[in-house]
Image 1: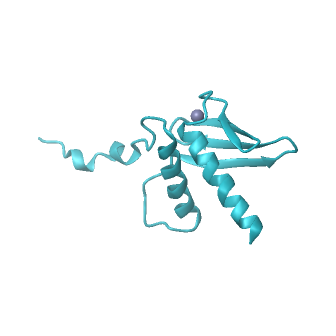
Image 2 (image 1 turned 90 degrees about the vertical axis):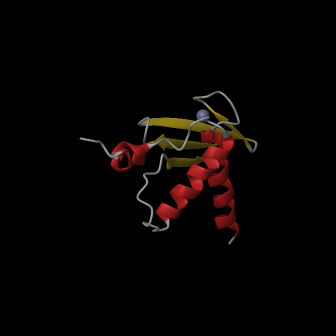
Length: 111
Ligand SMILES: [Zn+2]
């Protein structure tokens, strides 16, 4: 008997984040946004989603949930510069996602 690899459901869950770079976060964001906007054409699960967003006096704070790792990631945006508290960097997938969220929120506020 042969196993049809194409039917393997694990392939559906392949992570969108492989190299943990900013571009992957941007891709995760647009994927998440299309699902949020009711586009159910895609049945590929979103890896990152926004869980919480706080506007504070000194900084903005985002909690991003990683569905594949099942972890929450905190990104702090201070003076417009995001830093991921997990990766301790400003150019990982999580900061890419956070930048997209903030840019989109500012656009909503102006409208
Ligand atoms: Zn990160």
